Amino acid sequence: MWGFLPLYLILVQSVPPFEFVGWRIIWTLPFCLLIVFLRKQGQDLIAALKDKRSLLILTASATLIGINWLVYVWAIQNGNVYAASLGYYINPLLNVVLGTIVLGERLNRKQWLAVALAATGVAILASGALTTLWISLTLAFSFGTYGLLRKQVAVGSLPGLTIESAILLIPASLIALYYAGLPQGSAFGGDIQLSFYIMLGGVFTAVPLLLFAVAARRMDYSTLGFIQFLAPTIVFLLGLFVFKEELQTAQLICFLLIWTALSIFVWDLWSRRKKPDIA
Image (cartoon, rainbow, N blue to C red; front, side, top):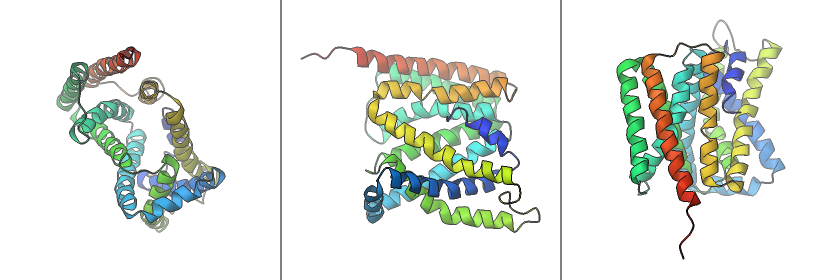
């Protein structure tokens, strides 16, 4: 679902990115509250709201996810599909580095090789496609840091997203009001079909995250990590065959190095998972 999100964004491409993200937040909150009610997670939500430390961290994570959504929507609407895809290829490798620096985790030789290849790819991209590099790095760093912050709070995925949406509700509402006051008016409310598509933004935000939370509890971590590479792969293929974006030489080399790095990374995870325990 995350991989095919650019196809949905085609339906709302007439909506300015800032306004769309505002409406996306506004419609995500009620949908999240509905699922919280159906899953009987109200107590988890209340407990998180009473924890000042959790609220502080969730405020920071909400800011990061808001930036991430805005840059992603802007990138897709402006024909930078490859840059968006590359950002989410870099993200898992960035998580490894953040885990090393912030959480004190250690990397083995294969993982360092994967990180070095990815860094080389980014360096090549910087020299040959500098104008789109900021998109990839912003998406990778915002989502990577977001995940790191969410790891610091004992709040479930859905209650956490609900609180983050509530925190962002005021700026999102101000954005919606600003666009409503412009001569062209708000994108929501004028055309019934477009308004329905905008409302779907809340569904397409909450549902994949809820499914991810369920999968995370039921699947092996290494398997889940491998499946996460499907989304940027789908986005890359959409850029190539649906959006027909021109693939620059620097981008192609960077993708090849990132794919090699991810192959080493996944191979290392899989091989260590397959090793028998020694008593």
